[in-house]
Image (tube, helix red, strand yellow):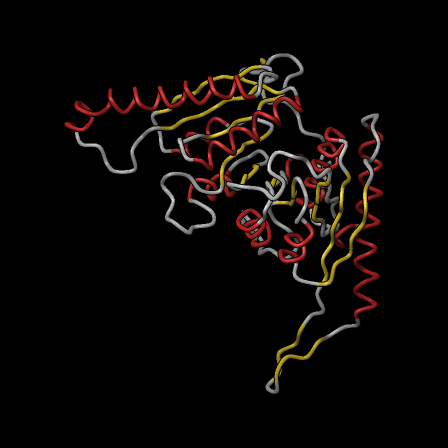
Length: 326
């Protein structure tokens, strides 16, 4: 059993969200939500989300929240609200118009102007969505900050997978044809693996499945002492990978599909460093929100946070929902 747990760690298939028993999206269509704020990073996220919506034939909800970060007095509301709203609406309309010109294959784009803080607006809009897309850092972030407060909150609290798009990527708009997924036997990593495999099939990309292992250290007065044998840890790592691939093949076969072309990579090193290294020259890095090494009750693990902060390609963080266990 992956991860040595009593319960099966893998998720059941996701179901479409409904409102009052009626689907909120066109029949058969998915839904992607992306946030914009006029920054170059959000423009990059918008373009990536549009390309993904074409690939998945999904509805694209473009959200612009315009509530200022400072408290509004009664006079501010009276004097400034109309001007702020008009400016925000113009920014949203112009961004969507440019997007329709640049990516004509988008099935359906819906504009959402929200009088709300950005993170709150995006989390609300993404309820029941298939994917939430944000840039690493928007207009309100401090210079040099790798992951902004909005993207951080979305990663921590969103109920759907979250894609974090960096300002630039090594390949620009040219695909490398490779997706990297990290596995460690945890429920979240199985969710991430399945998501990555389906995405690799859509893109006709190779899927690199990565498991990182580290020789444990025991701290003693004279220093650190390594505990365990490398060969034993390598064998355990290979077992984690083999079990994950066997589960994935079974899952996809039940859906009438098959596993994409893939490579298994057992890497010595810390999980975050190994995944970031393997993701160089990849189109996408996919990780679970919280792995086996995270503290119980922690919503976002350090590995997924480091990947979203430092990856040179877009990172998708997939959350495990215990209620979906089979």
